Image 1 (cartoon, rainbow, N blue to C red):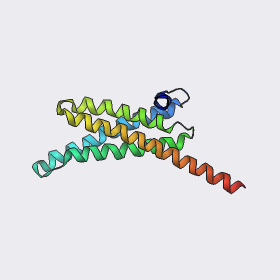
Image 2: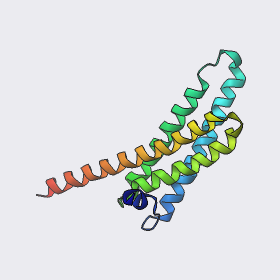
Image 3: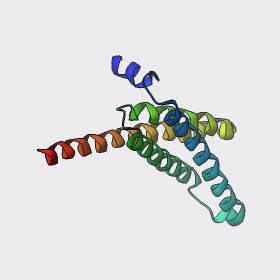
Length: 138
């Protein structure tokens, strides 16, 4: 529980990167839903697997955003940026798909899971980069 409190505590983060993560996730969710909606309108019944497409697209987008923000922030708070970005995406996704019931929850959680994984990947890459820089200095 202590680790979760540390991850969810926004103190010590750079507000600009926190807002960047949140705005990027909201923008990604809106643009991806718009793209899928236009495809469904264009192809209609020939479109199958829309639920899986939504979950995968939101997950990968949130993962990429979490990774990039954690990588450029360089302050050991990548998980916080990823989680908060994913939570912003979750709110927008649930507001857009609340009539879909379980699909709203599943797609929204993909944003949070993607942000968490992207933030942890960004932190791991930062640690590897720091370790390599220390080795090269010796």
